[in-house]
Length: 257
Length: 312
Image (cartoon, helix red, strand yellow):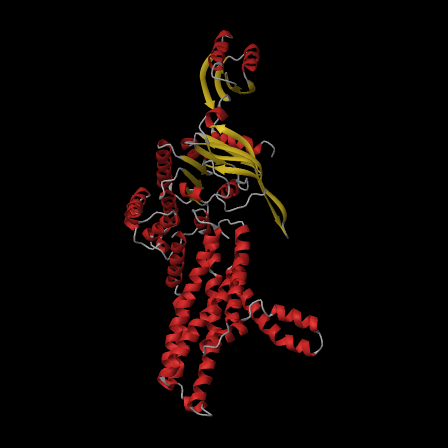
């Protein structure tokens, strides 16, 4: 009950601090296909154009939206620390686990709502242009993509337990780029005969594997995601969530950051 | 002796920072705050008062020692249901209205429904913000935010109220209001731990104090017992003789004499009130003329300055 209050008030905070404007910008991107001359990019017929457009949309929108997820989450705890209001939270009959879970759940719910809205908008835009058969797969793909954002939320929450908001956001983006680069470089190292470096790069690629998570979300939208991928995504989320709790539970908190 | 609401034993906090080295914020603090007392925590900046409070509230992990709050151990979060706290530095969320903020804080205490709504109204009236209940906190002055912070700390009708510099942003009227609130709580048998630099406030509302310096506890006890004894006497005498000077030297310590024409101004410290008539008698016996005899007790401020400057 107390934790739900914290979730609700964190959602209210984001709402009143104009966070929806950032999400609205993404929604505008989703609407673009309804006004684009799709024939111009159609090579092998309408279906191919639809697939290409949908794939492009998923990719582009997900990257923008994942950045927004990191930006939103990175300020949740640091804002309380900077205001000194974290002391009003941790001195109430709430455990630190509840405080952290409340903040994480709020960010997760916010992202779920945002992805659902974007999904509806994108699905409508594509349906208008390419036929209603694309509505449900596109919507489902976007909703499933919120799973990707939850992993980002958990990682950013972990980073924000260690550092101020801006640093946490930069660290998240850095981890994201590092993971992507490592993923690209691992096969190169393998072909160059350095299997140890390849294994190291493979491990680094799992710190925040946005590319893999995005692919999982896309496969989910096509109804072909294996259960193992979902479990792995939840595992990653739990790992970073627990790491965040490990740091937050031991952290000394005082007013003014 | 009432049971202790706060009891610490050998409590300490040491910070190990990579670039700044080791800082001892609090060391070996053994403190007892009895139930129903209004306890003042004093000390210069950096004495470790706020760190002590934050350790008691679970915001900072002690490096050593232990403590109990209302008989409960350090890890018990449920005991916080009975505690109210006003932090030293804060900026309340400006996007909320005053009533919303109190509703939020009340729900975190586990309160709700009509009882919470009534309690919010009571608290807003108590701190003089009822007319601003629907105003966004962003429009509040620092003093108004401090009043609102006090209101949230009182929402749960706490058995223990911890106030960390609660009047730092308040005008004299606001300070008086906080004093009245604390006195009201004291009269209802609640325990108050008050950290303030305003010694006159502490002296007026607290019955016990602890003085900390450089992370250590220097004095602890009732204000009466800490201030008992030392009385300074100012004596104006005409016709001062060497015999009288010697007699006064035996009655007290630290005799200082300033001669102005025929009248001498003397100052000396005596151990108790019983010495005051003896001083008057000594003047009379020596045939001198007594123009004035003014006893001055040591104030809390005098004691504080003396303790803080002892080793300086």
